[in-house]
Each structure stands twice: as C-alpha cells, then as structure tokens.
Amino acid sequence: MQREKRLTLKHIRAIDAVASARGFAPAADRLATTQPAISRSVASAEKLLGVPLFQRGWGGTEPTALGENVLRHCSNALKLIQSAEDDIEAMSGIRPRLANFLRSHHLDAIAAVLTFGSASAASQHLGITQPAVSRAIGAATEYSKQILFERKRAGLEPTKQARRLKELHDSLERELTAIKSLVDRPRPGLIGRLAVGMLPFSGQDLIAKAFGELTKTNPDLRLIAVPGSYAMLAEALRRGELDCMVGVLRNPAPYPDLQETYLYEEKFTLVARSDHPCHRKNLSIADLRDESWIVAQHGTPIRKYFETLFRSVGAVPPAQTCEIHSFTNAEKVIVNSHSIALLCYGEQQLKTLPDGLKKLDVNLPDALTAVGITYRKAGDPGEVLQCFEKLLRDLVAESSDEPVTVP
Image (cartoon, rainbow, N blue to C red):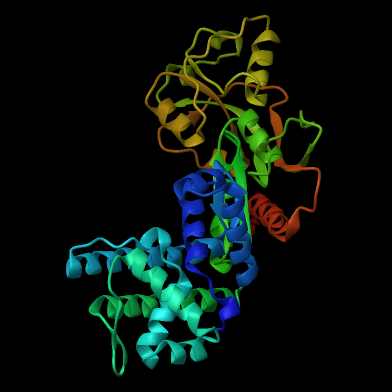
C-alpha cells in the first residue's frame, strides 16, 4: 500500500469514536482529547481517502454511505488490537496499553525489525533513520509493558510478544488495504445521503416506493426516512439535518427560507370501521358532531379543515379523542374502535382500503389538498434530491394512469 494513502491508528480511533458518539465533541471526551484534534484527524482521513466520511444528520453526526463501510473496517481494526491485548496479557500476565497509545509507526518498526533482523536494515526499508526506529520500538515497549526484543550477537531476537504484534501489524494492513480498495473501486449510481421528513398521513406510501426503487441501483446512497410533526421536521430541514420533507403543503411554507413544490392531490376523507352504525344512515357533518374522532394535531391542514367543516354548518368542532402521527397506526386504531377519522387518501388508496375500513358517504366540500415536497431555498438541491423528486413525479404519473377499457 502507498503510505500516503494509508490511514493511521489515530485516524481509525477518531473515525470510530465520532461514529459511536454521533458527534465530534463527545468523541473528543471519549478519547480524552480536544474537539479540534478529532476534527483534524477526521478531515485528514477524508483527504487521504478522497471521500467524505461524515455528514450532519438526524440527531447528530452520522456516517455517509461510504463512511459506513469504512467504519466497519475501522471497528474491525480496533477489535484486532483488543484481541492482541488479550493474547499478550495471557502470555505475560501483564495487560498492555495498546488500545489508546499504540501508533502505526510503532507497529511498522516492530514488523520491519522482525522481518529484516536489525534496526539498521529496518530503517533502510522504512526510509527513516535508525534512531527513529529505536524510538518507535522503545515507545511500543513502554505501552505494551513487555520486552519485545532481546539483543543477541546475531542481532535483535524478537520475543513471542513482538511476534504477536507483528501478526497484529499484518492483520491491520489487510484492513487498511480493504479500505483503500473500497474507496478506489468504481461506484455505480448515486453517492451520498437522502434524508426525507415524512409528514403525518400523506405521501408516505410514495416515499416507501421511491426508496425501494433507489436501493436497486444506488448501493452507496444512504437513505433515511424520518416521520414527525411539521414543526419538528421543518426545523430539522432548516438545520440541514433533512434534505426535504414530503406531505400536505402549507401553501405557502410558513418559514421564509423554505419553498414548496406541488406533486399531486389527495382528498380529505371520512373513514370508519366497516360495521360502524354511521354507514347505515344518511348522515351530514352536523349529525357526526357527537361521535368519537381521530384527527391530526392542531396546526395541521387536516385539523384546520376538520374545524372549518363543523363551523361551516354552525356546529362546534367535536373534541378529539385520539391523536396519532402514523397513518398506518391510525387505520389500525380505527378498525379496533368506534371512532371516525378524517384522513388524506389518494385515488388509488381509496380503491384499496384495508380490510375492516370503509369510507363514509358524507359530502365534504373543497376536500382536495395539495401534497408535495418542501425544500430549503438556499443552495443547489444536488443530483440526489433532483433524482428523488423526478422519481416521485414518475410514480405519481404511473399511479394516475387509468387502465384503458376495450369495448
């Protein structure tokens, strides 16, 4: 391996700590160092490899798709060091301090001396001075708390502990070679991350289908779907933790730095369990004010429509008995209760309601609502986000194509 392309143990520790702690500051605490030092180590590793390893994500710093694979080899490397510590302790009864203090050049010096038989020959092989080789072995001797070489007339004779460290050196080289092969190989498809906020009750099937399509041809694309309320997801979008959110549009977006893009329309629809008594009556909205209801939370377009619906017939909006943020869970609650729900459905969804659910035959005025994507205004959306939007539009067009009936 070319040395300029090789990660060091310092890099490996920093990468593993940032991934485990989900942030640079807690990683610094874990390694008893400073946040700038951790940041420099990770930046140096990314420069060596030529790929980004981390990005700001939902709930903290998260690995990129390629970073996940690099992280796997870093974790393996740390496990190899742990195993060497265990073996050396079993040999001598003394626990070495390798995990925190061992450095790559320490192992390089040990391996070279063991291979070539002397510090002078090792220095020629490594391209460093003989005193530098001696200092590296001295530091490794101190951290391992072991005698690594015994001076004999024929040269330096390695102890079994030194041979075990040579094995560790060779195993780590294989992990580092795997990392280099990983980042150097041609990578098909899109690379990066797509984090999508899923607003309650609308567009979630569409996101699932789009993610399914993206996984088929983009192995290095990290996909994240985050359900939540509008306020929570909008703040995450504005901070850059999400790339977009999909759901019922506010028209316009309530934040000046966000913009909305229309995709399709869904319909506010009343549904109840199939055997609910309301299906046997010719009812109006006013007749339903004393029923139990499942509706979205305050501040959402669905809740606003619900309240407007009752006020338009001179009725006080009924109290809500159940607030659920998941569309699927809402449908399950409806099937297992006597509640009526106001939900959003696309035309295809209405044709395939789950068993046990039935649409109420009640006229709802102005029931169409726009569903779309919300972005940040600033910055280039990038290839990944543009591809996702196109895929959503293709799926919408595909679902709206009605089959042609041949007479």
